[in-house]
Image 1 (cartoon, rainbow, N blue to C red):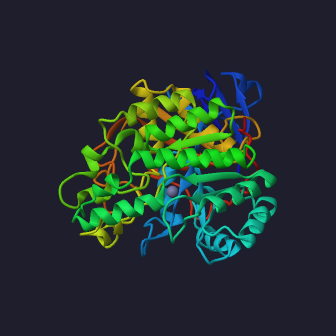
Image 2 (image 1 turned 90 degrees about the horizontal axis):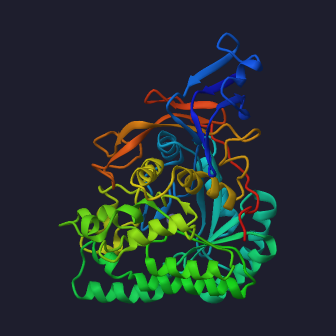
Image 3 (image 1 turned 90 degrees about the vertical axis):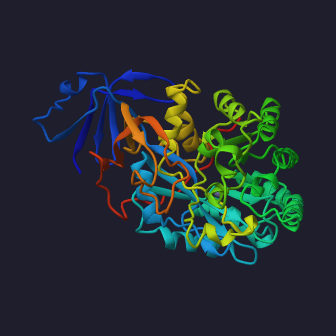
Length: 475
Ligand SMILES: [Zn+2]
């Protein structure tokens, strides 16, 4: 591989922006140079350096999406993106690293679950990938396996569920034991924080009343039960000895308030939200007539637009109570998949597909004045890399880092949706008709151009498994 010079752009990081050229040598960034400096190093168009003109564009570290579910088995079906289709879609959206969730279900071994995920992903990914491990059954064997994965497999974060009894659910005692284990190995505990035991009662009662439409998915998962579970997880992490806790897919103001309080106490508590919780609502999407609302059945659920969750989540992003925006990409088609829940909302596979659109949707937050340009980079790339042990290989434009680069055109425009030919393997889009400012211009993954001139130029199998270290973002 030769050298590439990205010339004339504005390099934007989590902490500022400046006019600079980015020199890439092979798979890594060789230098971030003041304009004109490249020539003093003998880098010219006449030399063996490919020049990419980034005049008028932003040059930012490629997106890091730390919450995806390719091929996830759920509710009798599988998430519709494979590692191949999902990582191609991610690349189209300026994402150069995903961290997906390997699954251990109750009764299975952790190592078998991780091996399954390696088998699904190996040789199929267009961009780099890492794994978190879902622990679906906390016992002596899985606790031992957690330590082994941290020490040997580059898996340094473990997801537990306070929801989905009988599938992934852990009780409070199991959660405490897993947290104590993580405290010893230095790992991060990720939590799906909803009170699943109480939710199951509400679901059964709703169905008994004949309330079967998709909107009842949200009414049976009230914000109070997200807030309660978030607080319980925080207190358990506190008792376990200030063990690092990362609350996933936060949708409710009540949960955000618990995280803010814990952080003010100095606890190692972090949270993420997703684009759907910043833009979509029960009223505008989930409660649409008939079965259409099934497109927006996800957990945690969309919330009411009259309860200020959107406003509070954007504020949380500014205040760093929410450190990360991920997607929780978990796509299901309407046909044969979401349709499993016709006549019973509780059988609708939970998930929304967004891996392609996170950078676009959050850039619209910059345009709307919700977050700064730097905060866009920080929440979508730099902080996720730091929290999950990928930094400074990923998440930063600096010498020695992987040459994962997104060149962003602020004067461009993006129309989102299936009708606009999105690249996710879905028969609909949760974002159909969304029009946003800005556009993905060029994407590089470890020095290889994977998107350019509205064309995917990457290759299946280019993406490598990344062994992750411990978090470098603790209090
Ligand atoms: Zn998820």
